[in-house]
Image: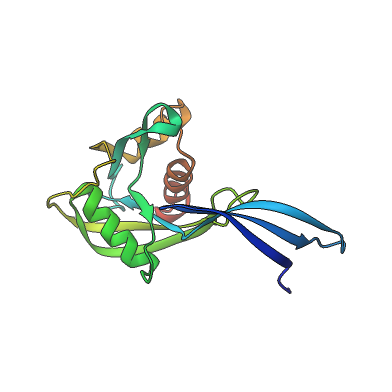
Length: 182
């Protein structure tokens, strides 16, 4: 497929995102303008505190303050991929920073677009096993608490609307349905 971009005009460059207005050629040959949020990509991790093949394994969740949600959300550890960093290196760094844990094994689960209607952000999602506890190193704008739940508890939290974060819901459902032999 050829690149449909005719021209790009940068409107804003920030710490996490940039905003472009692209002139594009659509599949039918017509042209138009699209506002698109550019993002370096992210990683997300489903960290297992116990053997994932055991009965009702335990995972770590974050109870994290999110300004856009006007409160706290339950999430899996995740974060932005930094310049020159591979997705798996970012996953290892984010797990350590947010939970204090290191993992002996990361297994790639899937990669998905977060909201392709307006952003090019992709999230690379991993399962982390063989965790060793350590010290977290959260950033000054991160307000979070690490909690341990069983997979069945996490599934109930999704069903009951307690977990409202899309990447977290998808990662837990995917893990329960496919990675654990669901």
